Image: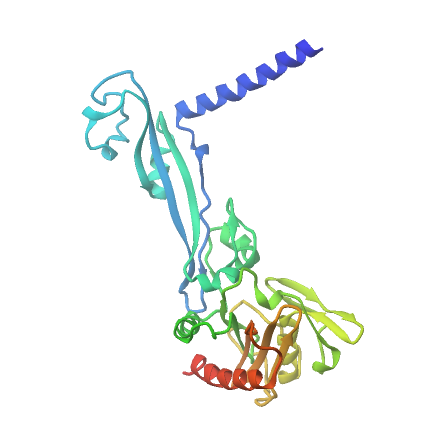
Length: 336
């Protein structure tokens, strides 16, 4: 029995080895991943993420002839001097192939293609919201939410306003370490997310937090948008929810009806009447030493978040300074 098992194992190893050698000799295309996806765009058609081609081509030299006579015609344009070619081994013929060049070379004998198409987020401060991909599949964020369309090579427009986002990014660089770690701006009449800034790896609007039950007049049991849904839980006199719950609570209270936050651009406003004035909300999250503020300004609802300075505690002077800074910062970010 053991003898037969060893024979089967040796046969399996031989089969794998033979398949690998056969594929290399054919120039198999299995060495690269074709993961081209559609573009993610802002509401005006500006790209938020692009496809970055990263392919290399190698020629398997077998030493059958000299002076490059065994070099395929399709490969010769990539080789400057055939007299100095190695007789045997792998020869790098290009490390910057485009997708079109890959299609032309992938079935050429003795040519091996390696690499993949990578997704490049154009603005690092938007990385958490954009999300990530692997093998052509969206794993998180907008890449996952709109995966079906993007896999079909269709571009997908979002509610984001890149001009507004860039304004926030520029002020973040000028403001220095006291600038919020996270910023989100919603349009109150539609619930659209217009701008997003974060130095964290997760979408802070979906991160759980605990607040006193009496802070909000009304809390939606479930908040839902393209990145998923979240439900709140009651824990004694406290509520475990997310910043998105508070955003939706504000939107509904201001409009008088349900307004869901959204990442999809809307052509018409959903709110017929809008309460223009409301008291801003400032929260201190003691479990992680963070602050969170919800500020209404004209037709905008801004959500800001950051860390409490290590030398300070939950003291009145800090909040007074923070509110003063926010008043100035909000006016700068949403100025026409």
